[in-house]
Image (cartoon, rainbow, N blue to C red):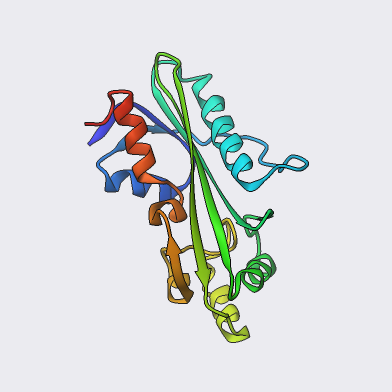
Length: 192
């Protein structure tokens, strides 16, 4: 069912699908065109929160009578922020770094209500890949799933075969922490 007055400030098909899983179909999807560059000394959690807020504010400035939800996902090893992989070499580099070690996936979510109230959360999940062989890495690079993904992989695809352990929200790792989103929407009287 389409939710009147609910706008997703994201072009991510994964976020749209996750919202559908909990019965929310935005009345509009408006990608926020923002500079996503990392600021000097910015930590992964801070980046996720700032970009989610920036995306929400960019869209909310034009959509003042709706609930506007922005989100951003950041993958990090320690303080090192991994990029959204733009090509095979970047996917390969990310997977080599993630191989055999734990990393964190932070998703910031920001919601503005029609009345101008702003709610923000950051969800942190931890993921551990097994030690990846060169063959494992090349097979994943060839499947193409890592392109455009933070950290160079998508947990909901073939990468799942290489993930030994997760702690925290699975939907967060996919790109939208549903529990946190529902709590925010319930707090505003939007979600029953």
